[in-house]
Amino acid sequence: MLRIFLLLSLIFYSNQSLAEVVKGIGSYTHTGVISPYEGCKLAKEKAKLNALEKTLGQTISSEELEKCSEIDGKSDCERNQFFLSSFNGEILKPKEINKNQTTESLSSGETIYICKIEIEAHVIPANQITDPGFDFNIKLNNYNFRTGDELKIEIGITKPMYMNIFQLLPYQDPKNYQAFKLFPNERETNSFLKSTKTKLPINAKYEVFFPEEINKKSVDEYLLFIASNEKMNFLNEYTTIEDLKSAYLRVTNRVKYQFKAYRIMK
Image 1 (cartoon, rainbow, N blue to C red):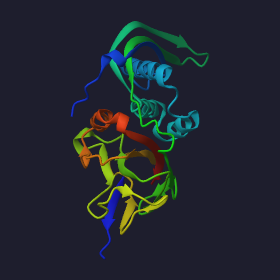
Image 2: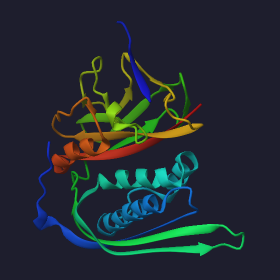
Image 3: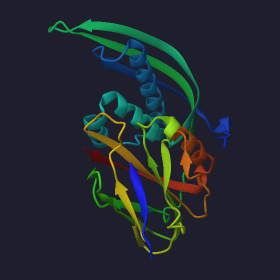
Image 4: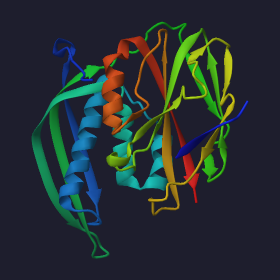
């Protein structure tokens, strides 16, 4: 998580006529560490992801997925993969059309559980700004942090644009909020970037800290950068990442976004 230290000195209305009907298949294999019910839930999420990627293409690299798996574990990482990819489109009316649960015995005597699910869903692409001259890139000062470290961000832009930055905490209980606006903030109120290169923070300090409620040695968090050619009014915090996604999807054709993942270690 991040603390900002100040230095002294919605409802998404879909046009279903644009939807493409797609089938998606997802399979999840585990050794009983989680319940068969939870395994099938993950298989269904993978089926939704498969449907999204058939329409939109891959939105998270295998390298990022592997890195995430090392930190959060396979199941949590695949949930994160789905929510990241889902910012590129909306799945409507997912219908389960086939489900197959089986078990296999390994030579070691261990039993593995397999759940395979096929769905059919309407997928609506979230069309971002298509202007090739409207683009930006992001560089963090580090991608591995410990409590007390500072986070610094460098943003390169092709033309002046407005920028909103959110911190996403997939592991967080929704009662404590899962999405916080990092920029603009109380001190950094101007979200309009003019320079071809902007360094954040300005007159502030972004300090990383390990979440107290997490019983792991490390966690992944994400920064969501939303660029637009007009000022966008987002809330400062959202109860769930899905709530932020809904707000984003309402203005999808007027923005362009990127994710950056970083790791916090105890």
